[in-house]
Image 1 (spheres, rainbow, N blue to C red):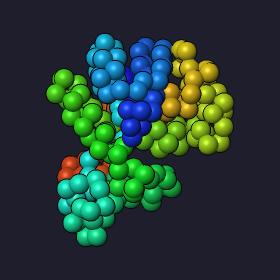
Image 2 (image 1 turned 30 degrees about the horizontal axis):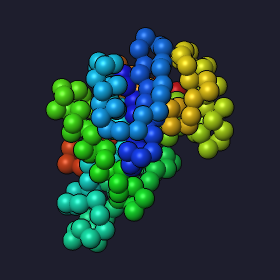
Image 3 (image 1 turned 90 degrees about the vertical axis):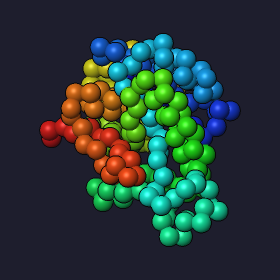
Image 4 (image 1 turned 180 degrees about the vertical axis):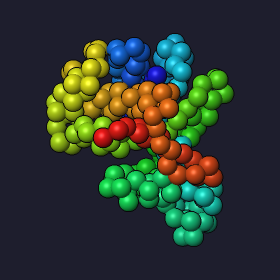
Length: 198
């Protein structure tokens, strides 16, 4: 599995992680071309992208001048469903998320044209469900929680972007094992969260 904690611009490095047989390798990657090359070399069964990969139903653009903005809003069903469960995330099309959403949609399309399966995930939600502290409560605590899960690799001193990418790869792991829940709908896109027994 490959997990990507995408940024809104190629000028800022994204977190990237590959998880294979309980071993993880992480790095920070800037350009779409380099993200695609590293991911293709890993030959993942699934790519888990931490980015909105679709628009709210009725929207035709990520930008505020979309004529449907005031009718269809800036969030999707999956975000509203997460919020009802106490999992906080940003709406897809608030201004600070617009470039990320656009980049995520375009990158997902490129990966799919390359023959890869791509899922949307949300590391914060995955961390909540797995009982891991979010990075805002201390990156060291989050890393310790991942170590306790048995994940091995080079991530002990990794950046928060890489740790979120690792968490995205974990979402891909649960997806491939059929232990997941898909929030949202087909019209607006599905967001994958782990489904585990308490």
